[in-house]
Amino acid sequence: METIDLLMHHRSIRKFKEQPLTSEQVKTLVTAAQHASTSSYVQSYSIIGVTDPDLKAALREVSGQTYVEHNGHLFVFVVDFNRHHHLGHHFEQPVDDYFGSTESLLVGTVDASLAAQNMAVAAESIGLGICYIGSLRNDMKRVSELLKLPEYTYPLFGMVVGVPDQEGSQKERLPFDVVYHENEYQPFEYRHYEAYDNRVSRYYEERTNGKRNDAWSAQVIQMLNGKPRLDVHDVLQFKGFLKQ
Amino acid sequence: METIDLLMHHRSIRKFKEQPLTSEQVKTLVTAAQHASTSSYVQSYSIIGVTDPDLKAALREVSGQTYVEHNGHLFVFVVDFNRHHHLGHHFEQPVDDYFGSTESLLVGTVDASLAAQNMAVAAESIGLGICYIGSLRNDMKRVSELLKLPEYTYPLFGMVVGVPDQEGSQKERLPFDVVYHENEYQPFEYRHYEAYDNRVSRYYEERTNGKRNDAWSAQVIQMLNGKPRLDVHDVLQFKGFLKQ
Image (cartoon, rainbow over all chains, first blue to last red; front, side, top):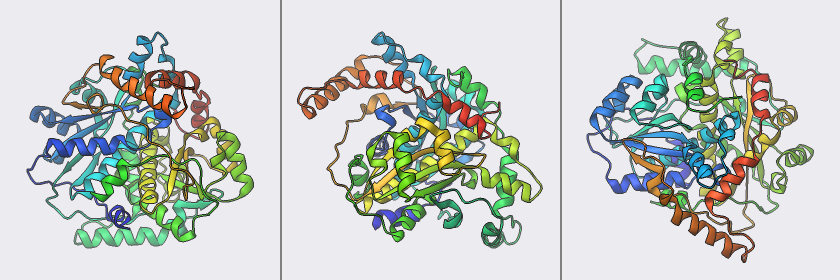
């Protein structure tokens, strides 16, 4: 049960010691990522390791998070059908029509995410901490330019990894019964969320000495209203996706 | 390094003993899944456990894979913003505009995938085998109807879990150097894929006594040409997504 214990104790780390990962650690993490399942063996992602200080500073600006600059290593997970595009042309059987389908977006996003979560688990299993950086999608165009990402690719998220310099804390997840349904979807009823909302509210109240006490519902409503990232659609189309 | 060993030894299992998971195992796997990172705490997925034999048979028909019917447990991972839709209305701050953004599709797909990969790792760590079922997207409309999935949700993939009744085999992944790039994307050159293609070809030749010897490139080109799943776009729009 050691691995399950590890999974149950995950917490995001946002402050790291100034200790870069070794190249052996990087190789282990990437290789662990690559061993995740991949849709029909398509392997539709690349991973960019960012070590250049100027580049890290520029990506920190996109994200708005200091730990994008200060960490053990910054990985950017890129959905990547560029190699399939080139292979199709190399073998004179172009497959470029496929990339415009919404299905390709799901396949690539799932492939990259499964790989990333394997990396997260691998990192935590050797005592490192991680945090996903979805905020790189604040400006996918800029990230694509900075990392020289070609057509039929897009940056999905980053992941910072390093030696933790904080405990981190774990936020309680939704009750099992509202996430797990048997045989058919169970319609929403607020009474199933009420006690959870109250517990999350108390968690913030205790952690912030009363400065903040938003329930889970309030927090996600505010988040969803504030993060439309409406340019994602145009960037994806510009990169060769979503042509349907 | 026990967990990393486990990750490195992943192989998909497509034949299971007739031994259902216990409800305790199901609870452990779902809880491990829930502990994965989630974008801004949004928790935008549900997991449907399918145990009804008729329902399993119907999903097997969509997928075309016998192991969708015969396994220890069938989970369907559903991207789920329906609860956020209802919470928005409950608190008189509707957030429905957000769901139409392409960003919501990425957030939900990533959230569900990270959870699923945690479940996969948890299952393998206790000696169970797993296989992702992307082929449920052969007919997302039918799957949605079968599982009574409401608006602002979609079935992303399934996962079968159970006691393995086969060894499974591991397909070699792409070379580290074509997947991992440092600081900037390295343009495609076929010579970096050639030796890999040859190794994959030999792997199939040995495994099938010469009946099959397709290289990785040939295999993915054929796959991408054969699996357009062009209805995914319409189903997602029908469910309230991709309105941009």
